[in-house]
Image (cartoon, rainbow, N blue to C red; front, top):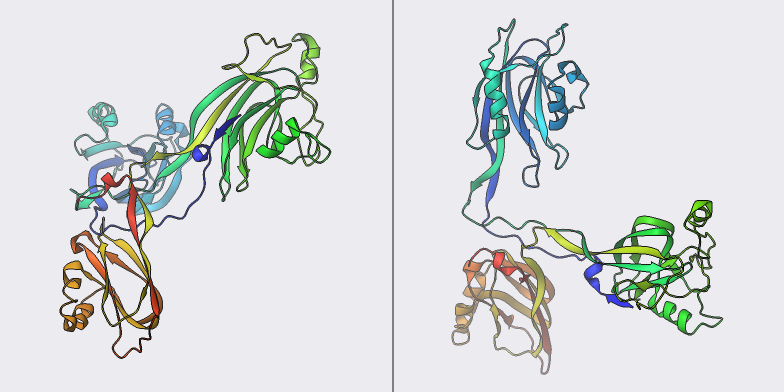
Length: 490
């Protein structure tokens, strides 16, 4: 029996990601532009856009002599229709905007699908659909090289237009406009199922195979495998301890007929099998050959048996019959002979990061947790050093008397022991302080330029401090816990 931990499960955690202070700024900036001449009913296709995570929106300024319609269509459809202009009106256009003379056109096309901006002169024309002609173009270097050759050929065939409508199209790029020398800001990590190990096994009729054991943890978790088999199999999950006891020490209270099965899938030949497991208890993946007896591989007899057995056990379980175990081909006993082998391949998956995986990971880290006896003497805790701009600090204080609480530069806090008269002015300058605190939790943010900071606490003037009374203080900060090399340099 194999065991896998959270590598094959995914769980959802709430992680606070702090914001950084100075970051790159992005905005729309003018890119290429072109002016096209259209007769009534004529079409024009602009450059091909490749939507991506950073630039998923198309942004175009349109300035026409006469009204036009502007829309988008897949680059493949537009290319196919280039040889048959009569079908242009039947294409699947999206983000259609009509009666445009002067406007800013935007569209969010389907992700990952190359798209073309299409402009059409709205005036009626009875003799069919035709293409307009570009009369001027200014492409940024390196942009839209895919259309350069076609454009050059088209511009050599100058047309005589009956009633030209000149349309200027200014395309925009989503680009960095400020602090462009800084690293890119953190992007959310993207997770997905990723193929990991695989195995091939053989089953005789009614054989079962015990695959991996999954430990989902207290929150539960998901698993996924691809399974392909020569003959139908039943797949299910069962608590590992129940399965072991029912197989090795069966009794009337615990046997294969009355244990609880989950995520039962029958008659599988080729499938992607998934299951959400509850928390805590280890679950084992089991695969069972549905055939009752060995069968002839020729003729109708083989086809009849390939339909599998549909008898269900109790508790929503799979078909249960006495049967021996199958064997993985990688570790099977060479002396074993199979009467009618059903070859089954299992492709396991793990839930892993697949995009923006080098971004920093942040988490709350406890730095201070203490109870101390109250006196009239200042209490200070040093070592609050931010590792990134916008570091979040959470301070929790519980005291029997009102307290002054503040975060100060460590150099200032160190002077307060010998110069208590500085306390009021120092606390007054702090951007992270509270007065008269007895039970409070509050948050502040620190930047790298602030340097090392200290938390200081002092009973307010006039507070009645009794002997052996204690105050409680706890401080947590958000710190980088993984991929920290991706942080901006201090």
